[in-house]
Structure formats: C-alpha cells, structure tokens
Length: 106
Image (cartoon, rainbow, N blue to C red; front, side, top):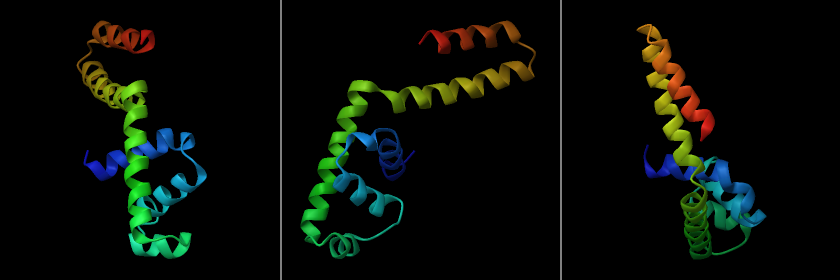
C-alpha cells in the first residue's frame, strides 16, 4: 500500500484523536483531493500553514500507530484471512481453525 493510501487509512482509524481543524484539513486533502492552495482558501490560512498542519497531523497519526498498531494488526488479519480461505478451499480445516484462534487471542 502506498504512503497516500496508508495516510488515508490512518486518518480513518485515528482521525477522531485529532483536532477538528486537523481532521478537516486531512479530509479535504485525502478525501476531497483538494490542493494545498484550495485548502488554504477554504480554511482562511496560508498554503504553508496547510502544509505544516498536514505534516504535523501525519506525524501524530504515525505516533498513534506506533503505539497502538491497529493498522498493522488490520493488515496482518487481512493476510491471515487470505491464508484461511486458501486452507479452507484445500479442506485444511484444522489449520484454518488454529489461525482463527490466534486472531481471537490477539
């Protein structure tokens, strides 16, 4: 997954931990695909201020991820889901159940 997608996912997961202004700017940037200039006009701040808010907010989101690892666990579980589906298609039910138990325990 590229950095842009990762930043969007981190915003989805941890966005509620940001201030309203930070979340609004990230939403405009990632979801509305607004440029820094467009966001600066909407928010009534300079382009540089928009850039700084985005950079600081992304750093905060990365800090949250480093501490909580929700996104990493999500990706890990997606990989395990694919593995389980493959096992089930091969009728390896016991192995699939073992992985499911690991997911539930974590």
